[in-house]
Structure formats: C-alpha cells, structure tokens
Length: 345
Image (cartoon, rainbow, N blue to C red; front, side, top):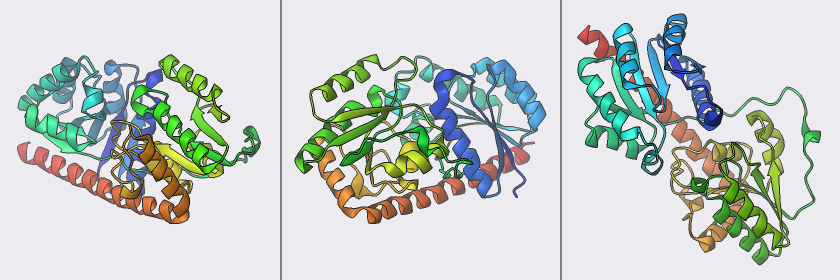
C-alpha cells in the first residue's frame, strides 16, 4: 500500500453518470495496485471543504470544470499540504461546446503562479497539449484505467428477454450526436442485409431528454426495414458485463471524441468482438473504423465476426497494456507532485 490517499471529487448532478462511472472505475483500478482512493460527490464547490477535512487526502482530483476559480484559490491556500488537481475529461471538440472552458482554464493557470500545490490534468493527449502549450499551464497526462466489475451477487437473467435473432449487435451508451449511433445503426443494417441475417440492434433507452431527434430518427429508420431496434434500460455494470453483453454477437463503439470508452472495454471484458473509432487508442488497429464510412464499418464488423475470440484477445491485450501505462502515469504523478511540494515547503 502506498503512502498516498487520493480523493476524487465529482459534482453531484443527474447528467454526470458517465463521468462518475469512469471515476469509480479509475478508483477501483488504482486500488488494485495499492493506491488508496475514494470518490465523493458534493452538491457544489462549497461542499468540498468538508470532504477534504473528513478524508484527509494527500491529493485531491476534481473531475471536470465546475469549481469557480475563486473557490479553487481559496481551497489551495486553505489546504497548502494537499496537492490539488482539476482533471479535464473532454477532447477539444467537446471542450469547445463548454462556454466557460477557456475562460476558467486561463484563470486556473493564473492560480498556479501563486499556488505550487495546484495542477491541471487531462486524460487525452490533445487536451493535455492544449493546457500545456496554449495556456502555458502546469499540466500532466493522466489516462483512464479499467477494472472489470465483480460478478452479480444474484442471477438476474430472467430480467431481460431476447428475441431469437441471427445477429445481435450492441451499441450501448448515451444517444448523443457525438456517439454517432445513427451512422453505426445504418452500417449494422447494411452489414446484416449483405450477410442475409436478421439484425437486433441494441441501444440504451433515451436518458435525460437530450436525444429526441436521434432516437426518433433511429426508430423511424428501423421501421422501414425488416430489422429491429431493441431499447434497454440502463443496467448496472456487473449485470451488463455478465448477463447482457455475453448474449451479443458484436459490439460497436464508433463514436467521436473518445478519451477511453468504458463501454467498449466492458464489451471486450465480456468476450464480445468489438469495433470502435480511431479515438479508442487501446483497441487493436484491426478494428478501428472511420465514423462516417459505412462500408468500412461493415468490413470491420465482418472481420470482427470472422476473428471471433482471437479478435477479442487482441483487444484485451491492448486494454491490459493501456491499464499498465495508466497506473504507471498515476504513480509517477503522485510521487512527483508530492516531492515538488515538499521541496517548496
């Protein structure tokens, strides 16, 4: 067990389930290599003081841009022996849609000048380079890591029923424009038609009210075919990995601006042949596809289906290697940031 205690802080809000899921998995992954950590979700930035006082961490990592600069300056000065870090999860295309992103990153970089216990970080190379080279801030690249969930405590296989289909393709995740679900569904339909198979295309049900147009278009597209769109509720990860995904023939995660893609990792952990976008760096290059090229997605689906377990093994190797790199990066950051603070103090 290391001498570090890392407190991960997310803002408590209904639409941050994907971010919170990633942070919880990261916490589990670091625990497996002996790094003590915990995840908390205060209602707002004013709740951070209490969490830090109770946990007494050596490092605090605040996930996403939501703590006002003035409050962050107050926290850094109030806890000078704690290493503070704001981690930005978005790639540049998503970051551009955040109205406060550049303003607050600039403010954060100014806070660093008087507070040597404050870092910025990102889990993608592009965003790390933006912070370091454009805003000239002290930044570190801290990749995501993955931990397969433990098996469910009870058998819930009767909770879902599958139609008898020739081809079950999973494309789970939020139905958002950046996730490219509509194009992936079109590619899966073309693939099924050319293979002369009936397709059940599995997605998560609409969540949060942000995806009316996409889900409407998906439903209407499938109504013009002989294939079926199957909408699932949002399951716990253990149930998804051990009960739902093993029933799938193929997985698709050919979306935009991915910084890791936990759902793709869950598919691979469940033994599902999976294709994805070039953004999923840990995935084998054999299964990378252009997100706008239906023909290429179809060819990658055919390859994944043909290679079967061997293709899954290739993706698992990439995932294992990515985990090793991630935990090494976190260890290095924890040591270096703590040493720098000791030298200054």
